[in-house]
Image (cartoon, rainbow, N blue to C red):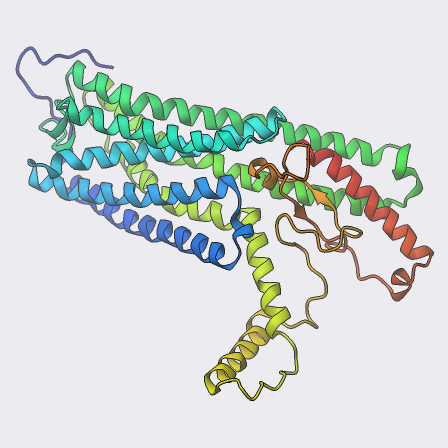
Length: 444
């Protein structure tokens, strides 16, 4: 932090030329419009899934993710207002826009940090989920971020900064203003981003370590593997790794978003205060990445196993309802519009989704639902990291992420269903890989 108190009365220039301003403002506006749409889409999808079946979205991290998307809406709107307010150079809008930017930026990073903490608490430490903690995720994230935005406003620090020619902490070249920005924005963001990186590294290391242990167990000559052919062992390993990799994908996406979006901004701000000059290159990096948070969050949301599970469940519900090749005749009491609607749905499902003849069985089932416990396994994958405690189970709460035994296996012959020796051998194989995968993932 630079200690310049501007005792000479000269204001250093920390801005850009007109062409650079035009480029940066254009990037800021257009990228934020995209993030606004992406964040809004997350909220709409979650609302639609909630209306369809509340169980599909009954997850702490998904609720946090929705609030992050709402925050992205606020942040993107604040950044657009921030750009517009620069033209006014004074007035209430030039004081309000920094509040929105600081508040939403901190709330976004604090909520993401809560996901990282939830991951550490349940996966790394192996603790049972406590619903009491969830309320504090919201209270602390919203409360602290609001304070960081409102306190500088109360202290009269927000306004038009002559040095940067922007509505920001002012005067930005003085020690007092920099103390405000470091304490309410930069340090919280640095700490939270660093924490997400550390948790990410620890989680990936643990998963890789457990993966190596799993490989050694599957390849050792003793135990259940000894009675199986190499093909069966390879199938077990493949199925187990698939569940693990699905968990890794979610971890990587959620925990890498803060570093991707914040590092450029943090670097540009610190560089400016250390060297008393603005770096155009760092701003070209930081401005679009900060604005991309909503879009990156949408990508993580769409690849979340819980969302994929929900989409698959809805798809299978539609196929079960409308996917029959022969459409049943409507009752006489059905209206003409209802018949037309059903006819359209039958056509749409059969041609765009599939039919019951094309899909035999189910790869995924509803959370907290086990259609056939004899053939299904309750694998506690990453989706268990934030499920609520179920009263029926004294053990740590785990949302059930069910995997069909035949997910990667070739179709069974009729003899397997008839209970022949082949069926028993395949059942033992399925049970073996279930036990291995469950033993590895049950600690998540």
